[in-house]
Image 1 (cartoon, rainbow, N blue to C red):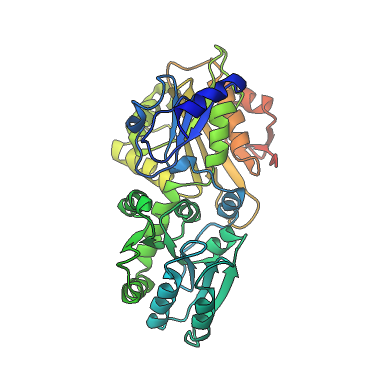
Image 2 (cartoon, rainbow, N blue to C red):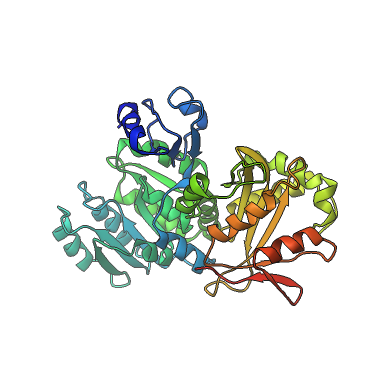
Length: 407
């Protein structure tokens, strides 16, 4: 599909969204989404109209709602390597799952194993036979055409997986992965994940042996620090909100007083200096919980933590396409696996005051995580913010402003 088809749809559509992952052909569209881990906006410079807006990166990965739900309700904590998920493509024509089982068996580690396969897999009979011969201390379950991948990933401590779209599902749930490249078009994605520290590449399907799998599992079983590092990096790449984020960018319905749309995009490390400048503004510090100016090194470390922490959503607020503020949502401590409560914090960049940016950002926060009870701490002297939150339906109780979950 390319520009010819897209132009033909102009007769009966108000706007056109294209989903691409190749950046190798021209498009006629208003929005283009590419969830690849290596793609850059300039890759599409000569391929889309000048006014086309780009949604680039795995934070726009359009995952099923179940992955977001499991991320929200099950914060991954430090734990031993007790459960391994083997998922190497539905039909797995190369029989890589068999190789993975051979590798796991060779470790003789006491683990539970979940194996995902399709009913029409050519190796299904061999898989069943291999499962019967696993060591006594390795229990296993074969899941055929599983409709519950999010639950399987959430309960696993390590995955042996491929480098396709399922990579972002595993990242959403912070699942450390030993990755096998099963198709040439997965190489770029796998490389990006490895470069980000979110996965360990074992190699191409033809080169990976059971011995390599066994060696890496054994090493990771003794290295909790590396497993946690892989998990944190994965969490920072994809938060499961890509579908909602895309919808809110395209049709949030939020507009500032001047008619410009207001939307959100996830913050990235390249935003660090911009956010630092906003935090240094006297107007920002006047009503901050900590009025002291942050040191640059402290600020940089804070941004990095926010981006990699699955309990924090750090967003840049856009007025039109211009960055105009920050919306942060922090999951409250002590409620893991319980009702979702998130503290909301908003500040607007100098030059964007009093045009409705904060009002729109607060409304977008409610739409981004409607299943959350939102909380806000507002200093007594911040009359404008108190009025803003009260008008949005928040009520004051025990010094905090509360809004019940909307979904």
